[in-house]
Amino acid sequence: MAGKNNANIGFEKQLWNAARELWGHIPAADYRKVIIGLIFLRYISNAFEKRYKELVAEGEGFEDDPDAYRAENVFFVPEAARWQKIAEAAHTPEIGIIIDDAMRAIEAENKSLKNVLPKNYANQDLDKRVLGNVVDLFTNNIDMSDTNEDKDLLGRTYEYCIAQFAAYEGTKGGEFYTPSSIVRTIVEVLKPFDDCRVYDPCCGSGGMFVQSVKFLQAHTGHRNRISIYGQESNADTWKMAKMNMAIRGIEANFGPYQADTFFNDLHPTLKVDFIMANPPFNLSNWGQDKLKNDVRWKYGIPPAGNANYAWIQHMIHHLASKGKIGLVLANGALSTQTGGEGEIRKNIIEDDLIEGIIALPSQLFYSVTIPVTLWFITRGKKQSGRTVFIDARKMGHMVDRKHRDFSAADIKKLADTFTAFQEGTLQDVKGFCAVVTTADIAAQDYILTPGRYVGIEDAILDDEPFDDKMKRLTGELSEMFEQSHGLEAEIRQRLGEIGWEIK
Image 1 (spheres, rainbow, N blue to C red):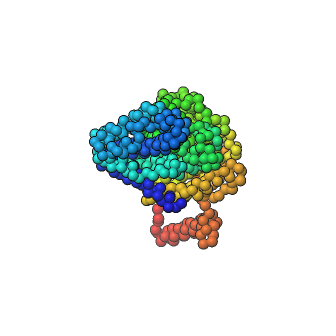
Image 2: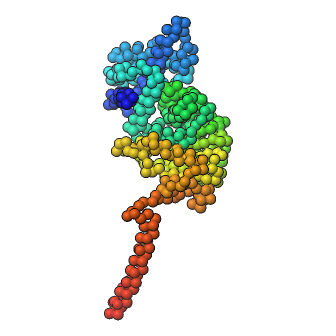
Image 3: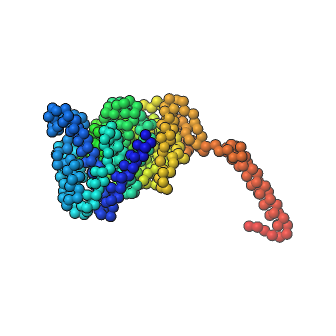
């Protein structure tokens, strides 16, 4: 099994090499779309070819019937769009036109993909010799002999490339990628169940949904018993999400087009069991002046200069009676008093909605360096009137010089801590976790910074507990100060006796 995993890693890096093949030949903003489109085309073509062979073997004459493919959640691929045709034309001057026409043909046969697939391969800025080399890489380095591995392999490859693009595109990459370990932490804490509804109002490439489906499959054996709703304002990212769901075989309602969540909520009456989101941090100029009377602002009108509490209240508005939210926010939202945010936070806390706060370590994101926090907001909390605070800033490991990641053990520890809190069995661990009442939070001016509640872990210095040693050293320091003051008074007196005065 280890050998197979290593082979898969090499496979993913081969596809990343395809992206590198394009560097220097097209604008950096375009190569992501080129690679992602080819990943999608390669996958659905192979899935189609396998189903085609099955239908031919059955001998019923349904191999050209689109419904015979849709019944098995397989996209019907017209003959001109099949990968064999593209591979044969890889080193012809028309390769870009052939790929664009293939994308159009697939969209025509599969209405759910209308206006989704990239059609920029005939662009004169894209060197057709280089494009042919990329097609060769896709042709020669994808082994799909094991169908059960195919979907996972391509899905992981898609995720791998998204992660790599996020790393190389910096801040822009953060628009469509949330590191998978953060997503997995949110999902493992929330624990989505069968027949649930999951929503992400700023869904990026759909990573929250992928992990939710994986969780369901691992814990219940059912991957399709989930209803998914999303919205995304960036057109390219919305298309990536649609392709990502298609590659994974996941049905999702992302609305008919990209749209601004605040101004055009595509799911206005939706009430869901789980919301998982990584909204844009500290978004300014989000349109507050035109939305002051919006029904979503139950706890107060968010300030014009920061949308953090607009996102929070939008999500609360879409929660079902026992619904749960897991979201990522910049640390400033924990304590800010700007523009009425402190009052909004107070109102949400007093409504007993904050179930838990997890402070994350730095360097988890590719696109931002500011510290961030996971918020868990719940209607009908199991532990009413209580909130769990977890300080995870020392957790994780460095995967390279710039980026940190959570291990499976880290994620399990956080999820288990949350579960213990919900079951009423969690014991406070100094420096790591603490269960706090709403009254305790009120006494701290409704500030939600975990460090205020979990304290500093005990450190053993010379076999003496940290708190004991600090108390002893503080006492000794006070004695020294007293001795210093006494010595200063004596010196002044002696100098005065000989006619010297210190001012």
